Amino acid sequence: MQLEAPKPKGRAMISLTPLIDVVFILLVFFMLATSFLDWTALPLSVPAQSAAPVSEVVVLNVRIDAEGQIFVDNVLTERSVLGAELSSRVADEPELHVLVKPDPAVDLQMLVNVVDAVRLASPGSMRLAR
Figure 1: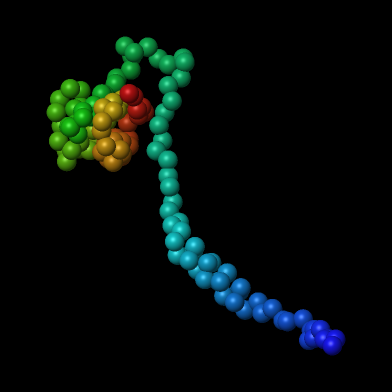
Figure 2: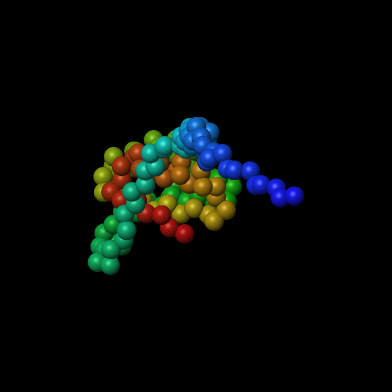
């Protein structure tokens, strides 16, 4: 007895509709999951090799200790009055150079808040030191 193999009925059509649906859902997911924030850099001046002598430059030291206390020229300053203190110092000396010295244990957000307060006071230059 000889059996015949069934004849192929033709090619099955592959529908692209499910693939398009999956791609669309992935597109919507990534559009909603992505954040489009405008990240801006903090402008910091880089010291040059031919900088003026230290005796001619007025430098204001802003130090942040490990507990988050802020010292302006070794005087404890509250965070709420830091901006006003810096603005008054800059008004007295427009070319004031501010040196921010954070302790290594200081939170990054605390450092950014202090640097923002210094930037808003518009000193002659601002530097970040270790």
